[in-house]
Image 1 (cartoon, rainbow, N blue to C red):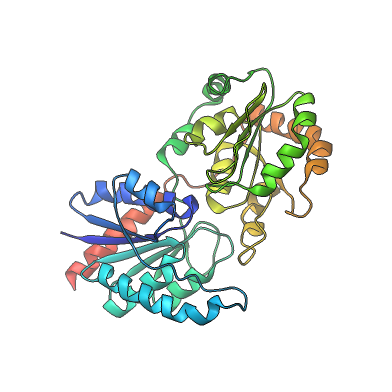
Image 2: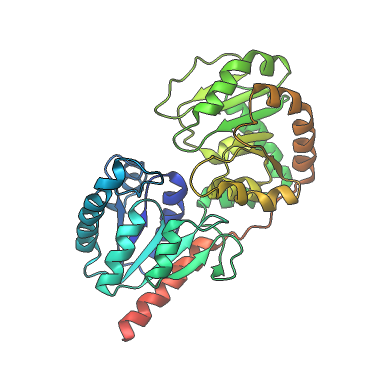
Length: 359
């Protein structure tokens, strides 16, 4: 039996693409054993296990980006995580990485064991895990244009692709039914606000400060506050949720989305033609500021810095945002992102496994 290790952890933006590829690989190689590498307490413990895949956790060893006391203990944590990753990788045929703190240890373990690596970079600006993958001799695949790797797009959930493939008439019908499912008015513009799987305290603060004014302007709001954040009380025109379980339904109901600019979110909103206010998360290597560039260039949204985005900005720009969103929705404008990335990566995996078998 063939065995494939998936390194993807920390956020849904890392895990969901890995799950999409795993499902395609199951079809191509029905008897393949697949194991996901994660960390204790990460969202992968619900997403991966909930999807029916095996998860094995290793010690979290995030490299400190600033000089602090964690820097002195990092090497011990990394060595421990590496030893744990070696045990998991041993005897496997392939490692596929999609990002997250587990990638470094897993890539090094694969290099030591002589196991081939496929690394997928979701962001427009490569991160540390991709640089490690290059060092470890990985085959690199990217979501965005990159002269050093093959561009395949981003693996998306089948439900998102199915929504993108609906006709404009079908989308309008689904919009009305989706809005009604939230108990809202199909004749009003709907704003979707979400900050990723963990929510955004910044977005939550902006909404709480200006909710009355926003609702008075005639819009209605679906707001994902995050599972670990306090969920406000619902009221007419305002639907607060700890977490959005059905993102296609949420997108279908949406006129304007307000969100971060993670690669998965950018691909989904671009492919679906949802006019979006992207507020890049001001951490990491600034990759989120680059992700939405292609969509903004084609009129699919705007980028606002985290420092500039507040209640005053949203109130003052709301009329023009709604006008742009209505135009984009009624004309059925979308971004032509690849829809087959999951299958393409699964086929790369199949070829790597076959080549290893022939050696």
